[in-house]
Image (cartoon, rainbow, N blue to C red; front, side, top):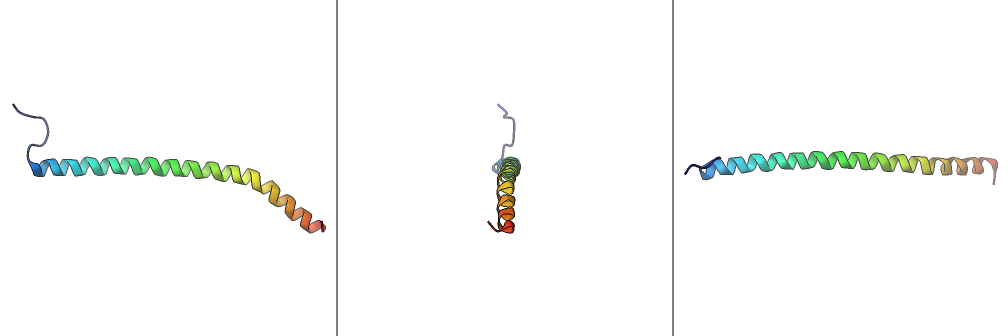
Length: 65
């Protein structure tokens, strides 16, 4: 009975390394995409929240309050 795929230990090792590195690369890609998306959302939230507060504080200090 013949099996599909590499038959020797060396070939199996090479195939495993190839598939493992490809899956790790794929995982790294998804993690980096998620982090970029997450930080852009946080940056948007922080900028919309803190900019009015900071500008209000700056105006108050300039007026002498």
